[in-house]
Image (cartoon, rainbow, N blue to C red; front, side, top):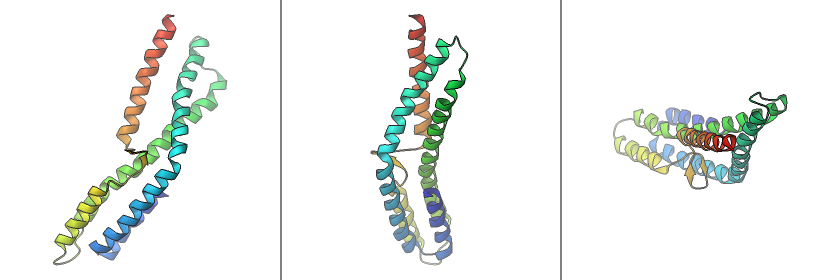
Length: 164
């Protein structure tokens, strides 16, 4: 629904043809994004902790079954994939917000509105709107880096566990 809200803003900019109105509506959109991020932040942190703890447990189960996954691991694996997918969906909100200034800059609001358009583009660019967890803006790159680093940690931990 947050993604749809950003799409509605973009359609409104195209339809209304007013850079001043666009800045006002973007301010409200950004405030809603920040509020929603603040409300769901604790739940994302809990899901992150579940994700961080589930992956090693799944891999330990595979090692104990001599490399063959058990059917009992399917729910945990589905939950892990669901949490990762949810993180990527939340990150796409930030990516979508990052593309809004390009749309506004490409618009022609009429003669004599170039300065107002540029001020609106600067306002939207510097607003830093997106999905936040604490003070960190959640982007696709951030989620992928988290997944990559966590996989390295788990593999390193499992090689130490396997050698013991």
